[in-house]
Length: 323
Image 1 (cartoon, rainbow, N blue to C red):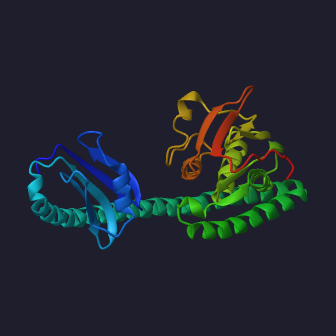
Image 2: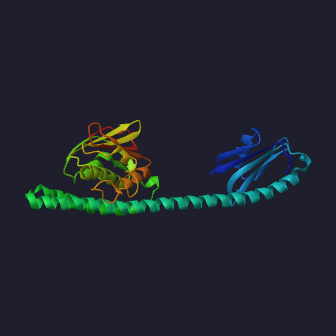
Image 3: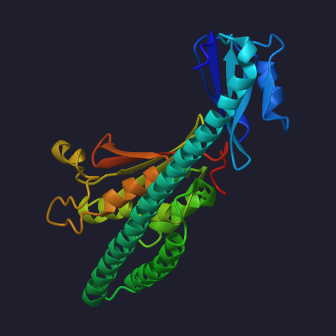
């Protein structure tokens, strides 16, 4: 419209340059920054053949348009009058676009929150079902052998279910926003997860991660699968903190997972074998770990059985094993 030699648009977000669009690299950056920080709505360049004007809406600065080498400098006042109208219209358009994106992002967060609540509900059903399975099995053994150690198993599984209900209630009140995650000791979570199971465990290492109470359920799901579905009698759990990554290796001596099944064990509702239950356990585990920005995969154990590898961002360089 002004037949300029060069036009630069500086897009601002929270008073910082977000994006810069231009026909060439010629720009009066110092003048632009000075205009940004002033109460003025425009500035005319010393050469008097160009100007910069703010794009505003309700006192919110969206950007600054920089115009160089206009065709008829003698008509600068008329150009400025037109530029003010264009800047107002642009400010309204940009304001509407940013509001749309904010609403869109809000809807995305709502979808994520809904998915999280679905997952926590599945955690509740799946884990309590596992605990009831422990209780029923222990009752059968108690009736058959009269060994009081099975009373302890029943008590622990019952307490764990009650605790899980409390934990999931807390998780339901937590959104997916990272700021609401908390600092957790991985070894403590592992110890709590294995306490209700009658098997040989070897736990080494430790680290801290940002997560929530659902992480304990991830460990419990994997251990339960190893004992119930994999017929394992021993589970080795190694917690490593290397290069800012907390790696949790859960390896068992069970029958393992066939290669044809490995790619599907994390699928929603996928069940394998006669002991398969809801098919949600590992799906929930994967979704939970991904919510923390981590990953989970399954591999073969060296001698026999399966090995699950969980990787999360370590919250600090935590190397003490016994805390």
